[in-house]
Image (cartoon, rainbow over all chains, first blue to last red; front, side, top):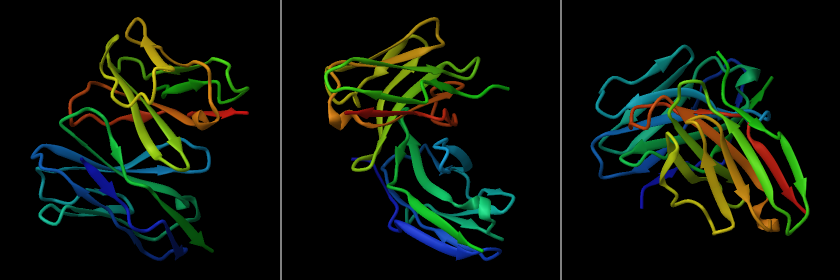
Length: 113
Length: 115
């Protein structure tokens, strides 16, 4: 079975500090994409960042970046200069072969002022 | 432009009643997905449409669940004879196409509570 695992149910960070959320996945596919989604209390899932597996360069979107280790099947999200608005559930997801997204269990991120 | 919209935002129903949940995808998106988010099960895939056809229904938990899509646009997820375990947030997403590289964009979800 294809799986995505987030081992940190909860994380907290001081405002303006840096935090890293972990994600590992399992696949035998060569063509796949990895995503981080953010879900604030409003429930809407918002795409934070995506990574194409064939690209060696780590994706970056402003304060958000990933550390993609293909051999280790690891895909962590780094949030720099954390802001109060970053507080949310973060879901790691993968998409390969089949068209559905497979999600991890989520990490609840708290930002301490 | 407009994002994915879902209605109703919240739905409370009694056990045994039927409910219909609606999803309006982003205009021009040919692929549409339904997911369910519950406390015990996390985020689960239910069904996916490419155009009006559903190539993958593997996630529908029972024959009480069905979905259709008309005109390559709006989709309705129907749950018959609702049970308390159906209580969850039902999320809809759409993408430009169904290829692996396409990003799925989500709606705000419908929170269903079965009493």
